[in-house]
Image 1 (cartoon, helix red, strand yellow):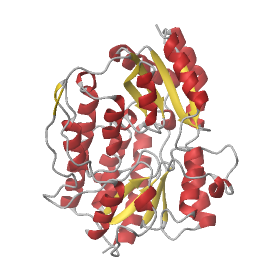
Image 2 (cartoon, one colour; image 1 turned 90 degrees about the vertical axis):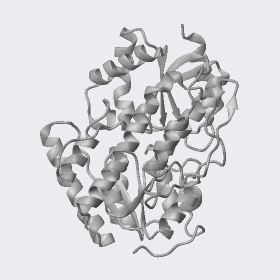
Image 3 (cartoon, one colour; image 1 turned 135 degrees about the vertical axis):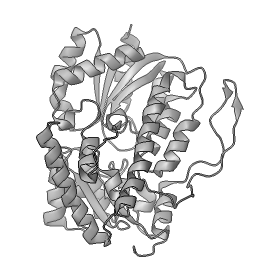
Length: 403
């Protein structure tokens, strides 16, 4: 059993930047009761008290005797953690945390997410977790795993997950072996070895949440919701229980969508959410995305009977992704297809500073899209909790030039 904690234990209960997720006790929901509200577009989103905060969800997880794992971005095996009794809390920085403490361990040009996550940990922000999981999403995150495991050595044990750079049968076999290694480490920490029932419960909940996310994106053209409302729900996938996310995703109302020049948003994370308010004020609307915190995690259910092979197949599904080493031409084709289907007139690649996988793809991606008639704007931002006037001016100028 995990040690009992209260809501006030550990800064992670207050500052975790985009994310956590758990499984509620059978028959229970962490969502408060909601009521329907009638608006000018007809029946509105189910209104009432807002969903519980990350702080509240994490506290309830600990009260239920479960453990918390802080997880760095962004492909990782949710069912594996759930089956072993862990609740994953995704750590995307968090935004607003100073780079100062973390920058002592990395070069000045290291990814903002990695440096701020290190500052957060050194400041005691992860004192309330039972493990830290770092997927090898990029070289910067692999470096973070080495720095924490070999030098900082924080109290929560650091686990790493090496993700293959391909989707061949050999890549799937390698990933299944990696997942077995991580599963053994989780069993050593929790003392739990999942049985068939535990696996099936974890897969059923996560597969249902994945389907709900895919359905939410499919309904996007018919939703009477602002971009900020839509992506608030999408980001809730990172912290709500799978069952509660499924219910929340279904609650967004259909009706006349807001107007505006259609944009596709690509990159890592749409942070801060004020970005969507600014775009709306500029007369633009995000009609589809290629975000690491969004559509890139539209996984497909896998039919394999072995849980680790099933996990590997699930993680290797999804659209072309620069962190997987997918061909740039294949990614460009997928982006063009999505933009044509959604009516997007231009692509905004929106990244934290020094994101190498995104920067590697950018020149050829710009070339492919320009040949297809789609303009591209690349915006780098510091995750300090606010958008610079320079970034806003560039976005506004880009929107004004779109046909």
